[in-house]
Amino acid sequence: MPLTRRTFLLGGASAAVLAACGGNDDDAPASGSTSTPTTATAGLTIARVFAPTQPVGTELRLPLALADGEQAILDDPPASITVRYGPEGSSERSEPIEVERHDDGIPTPYFPLVLTLPEIGSWQLDIEAAGQRAAASVKAVAANEVPAVPGRGEPLIALPTPTTEQPGGVDPICTRDPVCPFHDQTLEAAMSSGKAIAFLISTPQFCQTAICGPVLDLLVARQEQYAETVAFVHAEVYTDSTAKTPAPAVQAYGLTWEPSLFLAMPDGTITSRLDYTYDAVELDRALSLLVQ
Figure (cartoon, rainbow, N blue to C red):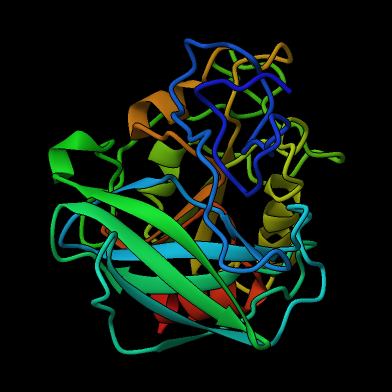
């Protein structure tokens, strides 16, 4: 698989690193990393399921997965991991953070680490799992050095996202098979519906980490339950099946990764954003907070 700006690291030194989605167009907007995580033992590797550069001074959700010494993602990792973090090259570390495994309804288990990096610079994440240790790194930079993607407390960006009646130059408008039911109204219309909003940007067909489809399926399974309170909208990542040109939603939201789920109140204020991956547990928690 060619390393492109859409590629982000899941783990391992191989050139065939896993990518967020398909496509090999260097003009695509997503950025990535071809660095490798450090490991303290040959038997455990940290698979960093997030962009390696993050904004300083804000709460971050950084999903981690575990891999073996050959960088194969573990399909049955421990129920929890312990994380300590500190400046790279220093012995200073935070208090331990216990992070539970999440894998309800998705194929790849992950650990959604939440922390705030207080200073600009390189930070090391030390992970202990089932008696083994490994490490990964993340770089904290000024907020204006990373994509300005709307987050919690900020407004959704109103868009005429592709619908069955008005595809807006996007074909196909949905690469799920069968097509998902979230293309009957635009995001603009959903934001005027008086309902809360769940807006997912993902591409099931071209997602080579096999997560864009499962996370969309989780939303589809909840549509009936939240039909009276939440408007669901899905937008594809690419304009066509060549998987080269980013769709308007990707460009408008400044995304350099996918999938990304935006949950917002009826007035459009974002209450949470789930990036890279999520499972049924995280989704149900976010939806319940949205409509409580």
